[in-house]
Length: 264
Ligand SMILES: NC(=O)C1=CN([C@@H]2O[C@H](COP(=O)(O)OP(=O)(O)OC[C@H]3O[C@@H](n4cnc5c(N)ncnc54)[C@H](O)[C@@H]3O)[C@@H](O)[C@H]2O)C=CC1
Ligand SMILES: O=C(O)[C@@H]1CCC=N1
Image (cartoon, rainbow, N blue to C red; front, side, top):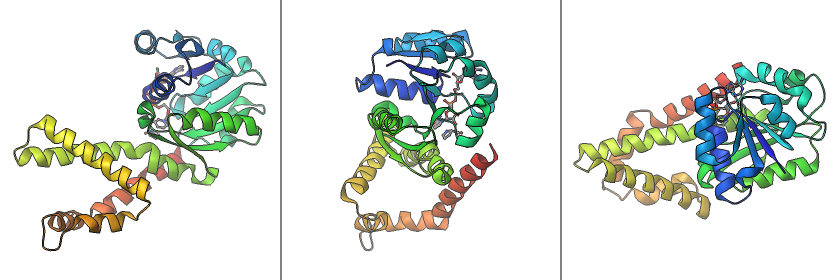
């Protein structure tokens, strides 16, 4: 099976890296295209995959074709590649905001299409991917995408009406988490920790907290209460975050992502 990626940016690279690391594909199974020679050369060196400037060549070679450019470039990329896409090719879009209907409209014909909303932790096998099969995707297509993306973390089928929410909560949220980790480390540095140690402690504490929530299934509020010793230090920090409208700010970040996705 050959997997083609049109676009070799941050997300495509994370997926390819995750698939390679998990041994799901070999470098020879992957062909990709990127806009610039510099990107093509870098990805070829990093990943050991075949690269080209020719999107139609990627489409022609691919049994699974991943459209991994930004939404704004979908019209030109699909116009360039669609005649080379075989009827039996499975097309996977990872674009935020673009619906199955819009993407099929750009092809101008029925295609075996599955929408995915992955995230960058796929690179280390800890991704979270939402999957939405189009009307002409077969059960085997859905199973294949679940297998590929499930090898890079978790992969779950959701209704298309929730894809913008999933894009915010899982696709975009790593950026928010990295901001949180950086801010925790800044606080540690302010209290005298060396920067590298503060970053390691912050990232490990966030990863451990997420692992504790996922593996126990206990509500985050309960887990938060487990940390807040009566009259202790943590509850002072919780009070400071509440005073800074931390939860409201996070909810507003999700809403802003959803609103932008709906405008794409
Ligand atoms: N970055 C992320 O964490 C996530 C991104 N996505 C989606 O993935 C897609 C790509 O996003 P990023 O990787 O962040 O963007 P990026 O800017 O890092 O990469 C985009 C890639 O597309 C290439 N490209 C642009 N025009 C092209 C063309 N005409 N032909 C061939 N290649 C072309 C660029 O050279 C670049 O390699 C977007 O649709 C985004 O919504 C989805 C989930 C998460
Ligand atoms: O920022 C974006 O548009 C993409 C989609 C989700 C994460 N990154």
